[in-house]
Image (cartoon, rainbow, N blue to C red; front, side, top):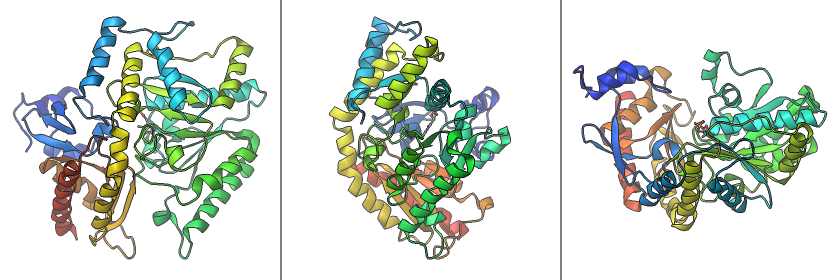
Length: 455
Ligand SMILES: *Cc1c(COP(=O)(O)O)cnc(C)c1O
């Protein structure tokens, strides 16, 4: 297990690298996994052990770990023009081309794109855009941002405030003016005797009640992931967006679709908003945007927000915002290639073709007496571990069941992620049937082992 020698990679990782979002007792016992390279959907550690990565890195390495075309696109662009900014009216040609492409593949007829280096910064940027344009339009009180509990929108002070997770309390977050609605998870949040449609109606009423009690003139925008990702793969309850969107429209509240995970094929559609048939006012993209080969995020504004932000900017002669590496030429070239690879080289198609196969495996696992719910949309899935299926009672938190399952999987050569009491699976878009078989075989072996210990 953990290599204890002082010069081991594990010891060196401990000595000078800080771990984010990492269970430190697990590291204490098992050591860090230090990786050297990957092939297809597999990664290899410094000891030569091979792992099937059922998480696509962090949802993003959807084309696998050795895609020649993506690496070549980066190399070519490094040779042509290795870096530039997008301030003062200057911008790399590849950035211009990428914006055209993003609007072309977006659900919007027209629009404009603003670049960042991450999804958190893209959400942060969107909030600043809303504050800026509401202020410019004479509505400076429109400051409040509505999201949902369990939502994940990032880690900057603003995007962490949008994230609806209790762990942010250690930072004294959320900031004031960030409001959280009930998570649209019918299985967990539905009340006794309540149908799914009634649940959705209750959540829509909760939104309208919140808008009215806070005052519509104080609300800047509503952000939602089409399927909640880091909240544990939670698809919305039936009719959710259809019920909420008219309320938002009634009070002139922009709807922002955070597509950092759902965008570019994860749900089996190009966008999550297409999968759930709603039209947002803007889209937030990152992760899949470059298939993980370059850090990049984007705010894709639809026609109305484009127009309003343009006017607000003209009024003071600029939009005073931007990151040094916004619209990086190498990132832009990589994103252009990634979009092409996902949409035209069969990756999106592979997700659509293999989703029924993935679903069938997930459905079968529901037969396990300790799996309470199986959730799937496209190539994202979660299995909810429960101690008692009939009452949906979770295991006691100090058993760390999902952590143990994930660690056991790692021992069997499978990387998957514990989230709350769920195990999350989000395979790369290049997964074959046989990769899926291997993933489920290793997972089931681990489930059996851990449930035998704790049940
Ligand atoms: C990962 C994620 C973010 C944050 O992106 P970073 O690049 O990690 O800052 C925002 N929104 C969603 C839905 C995400 O999954």
